[in-house]
Image (cartoon, helix red, strand yellow):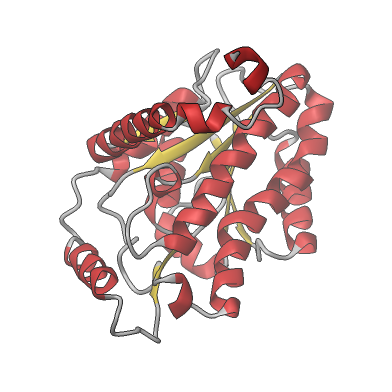
Length: 285
């Protein structure tokens, strides 16, 4: 295989970042296996007769479906170089307003689907002693906002598992990056990608106001998904990619604000924090 060509496995590829990634990579002559819940929609969205494109209908929360998709990809292309876990959706509502089923489904798609792909792709990457896993989280996984507790929790989980995964697989020659985008002009704020509680509680006034503000943003987000896709592709081509990659000026500012707040709070409560050590009183005397 041409050394400049890589085999990419991308989930959630029929819209948003996933679709932009697939199109840019195919235009660049790369080899792309892409997944969607609906293969016909994926083929229609990509709209190409490119022999380098392998569209796959996959249920990412089903282990057997994920395993077969990765096996098919490996048999079709002969290797797997870059895995982009992009599939996911937003869920809004106070914790009390969302049912157990809604909450677990959100974690299934946003967290456990990512774990399924990682679990079943690792044997191929370990055998090669190479590869790059890129997990798409959100700035909500660093600095979540009012009304998005479950979404923030799921995206926090993606960041946490990515950080430890990176340490676990480093000696195997495998790289890991977790991406935290801000607001981009994709279909994320449409009903197909965003679920809002159907059981609102009147007392949560701030939550309703936040949701209304976000829904009005649809089509007016500052982020360009084509530039985001190009940035993700770029970091997959560097020798030492970042573990964390923020995308968008809003993500950058929200992260810095969170870090500043966290720094101040940790220092403010330093005395009480350290007073719980067994040796603290001895040192004080």
